[in-house]
Image (cartoon, rainbow, N blue to C red; front, side):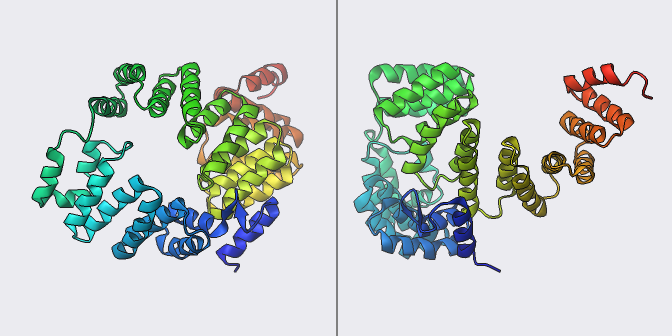
Length: 407
């Protein structure tokens, strides 16, 4: 059996991508990040160490390597990595160091790094830090209480922003929005306030206001990847595929290990008529997540929608080998068989889909089409009637026109 690295090179080669790098990043960083995201830390660590050797000053590599070591309770090596990270990204480094020193039972060092973190402009809310599982180990140290006794770590505007986030999390959206609007008027953290406003507007269904707020956030900070991702998704849901694609391009240039965005960009590219590039994006994702049956399903769906029925069949064969309990997988493979005139196979797969979920009008409609193509008018009428029963309007109209004399 081919090694994981070999499978990655194979899929990237098929996709027409470089097996050495993607978005200009070392392949060890990309594969290590994928393994990290799957919580496969023992496999991720050596790859991230290799990536660090190739690019010693890369803060993203340092942070992920340190976090992987931390998750494996390798606290001393993690501390060494975070000390280097602190020279590149002081806020992130100091917070990770505070947690790591706390786990090493070094309260004095932990508190010193926590104090450095609290002096940074962009910090987590006080309740989050006080309830942090690692930092809360310092609760028995009098210096912990002395540190928090200071009132100047968070300004009144900081606390107002934290209250807005708290209200948003509690789904009290209008109250949260009022606080965010007041913060906007004050000029406080313009980018983050605009981004949080966008999330509230999106939840309330005001896509126009959400879009406007996201653009304000990105005007203030073009590298705000969360705002970029939200704007790209919003454009895609609005059907603006051609506008979404360059936003996803920007996002993945800035954060190439935001792997789900490759799938989102694939959907946008397909909608924009870029079928081949869409499938390459799915292959890029599968290179690092080769056991993701849902990604094979997406590849099959995009291939089917773009008339690439044999490619859809290949993808769905793999998806169903991995997961045979999803009705939509059987439906898509059945549709793909039907499109290639494999009517017997199509009928079998569509029947399997109905065994798993008998209430899907789309599946009954597809099975009716297969019966009709096979010349079984009576079965077609029965299936179209079931499709109509489960919400397919056109199926009911067909029954009215063609099945009057059918039992």
